[in-house]
Image 1 (tube, helix red, strand yellow):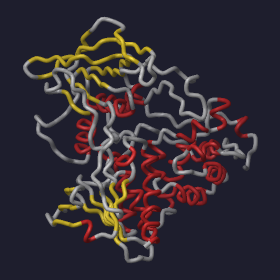
Image 2 (tube, one colour; image 1 turned 60 degrees about the vertical axis):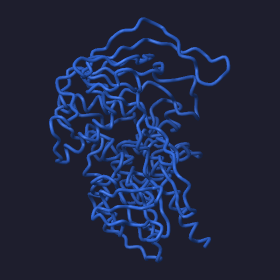
Image 3 (cartoon, rainbow, N blue to C red; image 1 turned 45 degrees about the vertical axis):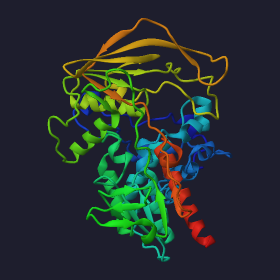
Image 4 (cartoon, helix red, strand yellow; image 1 turned 180 degrees about the vertical axis):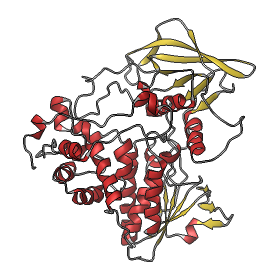
Length: 459
C-alpha cells in the first residue's frame, strides 16, 4: 500500500460518459477513459483492507487490493498478471459488470464512494493489449477432447480454462459469431464487438476451435455443423459442456399480444447488433424505433439497453414501466450489507431521455389494422401476503392508455430445463442457474472446467 492516506485525500473520480447529444448519434461506446495519472491516482484509494470484502463479493475472487497497488505504482504488467490469474476476460467485466466488488468496498460502506475497481480493471486490460502483455500460450495437450456447446461468457470461460489445462476444445455456436449474450444481447454502446473479436482471436491462436452456425440437438447430443456434417458428441468427444444460456425470454400473454410491433427485447437488440456488423434485413423484418413512441415493459438492464437503442434509432419518445415498486435512492434499509443494495439505478440510457414509472401493471395491448397503437395499463400496489411469500398485487388507480407504436418486452428469461445427461456432460452458466450476471457466468465456466478436469482424474 504505497499511499496509506489516499482514501482520505483523493476523491472518487469516474471517467464519465460522452456528451448526450454526441453519443446518441452513433453506437460507439459511451464510457470515456481517464488519463494515466488520474487512473493510477484512483487506484491509490484502495485501502488494502485486512479483510477485503471486494475479494469476497467478486464471483471470480479478484484480488483488487493487489492489482490496485501495482497499478498505483505504475506496474501495469504486474497488475495485469495478477488480474489474469482470477479473471480470464477483464476487458468484458471492466465494461459491463455491475461491480459487486464496489458495493462491498469498505470505502463504499463508510463514505458511499468506492474505489473505481471496474474502471481500473478495464484500464489494466486495455493497457495489456496495447503494450503486448497479452501473450499467446501453447499448452501441452493431454489427449482428451471436450465439446463446449455455446460461446457466451460461460462457454468461453470453460473453453479457455480447459484449453490451458491441455484439453483439445471445440466450441459449437448456433449463431454466426461467438459471444452469445455479449454479442447479441448487449448493445455496442456498452461493449464494442471488436473487443470480443480480439479475445476470440487470442483463444483461436492458443488452440480453441470454433464452429459457427451449428445446429445442436441436446437430447441426442448431436451437432449439424456448418458443412452439414452430423457430429456425434458422445462418440467424438470425451466430455461435453452445455453452456447454452437462457434462450427463452419471459413473454407477456396479455390480450392483443399478437399485434405487430410487439417484440421481445432481444429481437431489437440482437438485430441492431447484426445490422452494425453488416447484415441486412428487409423492411418487413426490421425492428426499429425510428419515429415511434416506444414503450419498454421491464425495469432491468435489458430494458435500459432498449431505451438507449431506441434513441439511437431515432425514436419519438420512450416510456419504461415496471410492475415492482420504485427502489429508494442511495440507501435501502431493507437490503443492508452484506446484501446487494437494491437502490434506484439510473443508467446512461436513462439519462438520454425516458419517462420511468413503477407499480404499473399491463392489462391489454391495443391496436389498429393489426398493429399496436397503445397499451392499457393500471397503477397497482403491493400488500403483504398473510400466508407469507410473494406480496399480493392490488389495484391503486384507474386504467389508462400509454401510446406506443413499438412495445419491447424486457422481463427476463426462463430457466431452461434439460434432459437427463450422461455423467460426462456438464452444465454451466445461465444454462444451469438461470439468468444471472456475466461475471457469474465466467466464474461458473471456470468451476465447470475444474469439474471436467476432476472427472478425468478420477478415471
